[in-house]
Length: 193
Image (tube, rainbow, N blue to C red; front, side, top):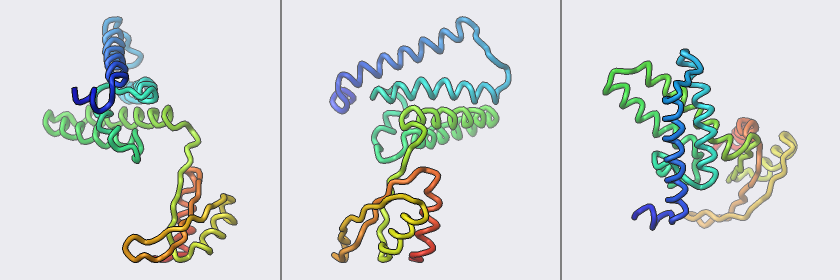
């Protein structure tokens, strides 16, 4: 009833179908005795890729499998895969401590890391860009440095401090993931605060 009110009928039906299909495929692998490898590391990696592809497609359709992903949906401003990874690591750590199965938990963490990276790949694609909002008293120098050094365009927004009421320029810049460290270096070299 809570899910129906919170997410709607389409979400419930889609999630039910996803959960049933997930269970069916797991049982089919077990029934037919499909074992691609006895190497646990390879199984963790390739199993993670397959699992991530399936889950990514489910999440991309706006559905869920009824697990931790429901919690992850509550934080749309955070990376979906990262939330799932953090919550699963907590569960695997508890499993390792309670059952004294540290090696199994380590393989599970490897698999889950691969799963979450593939989920993010399916949801966000390869060339995910990041939006940076930079608030600084040195906005003019930062704007010039970012455009000259990175070749990225910037937009200046007018902002106001909620506490002080002081007017500030806010730099809006869209960058590639691999440019995040470059932007941080530029900011630290110009604005030491």
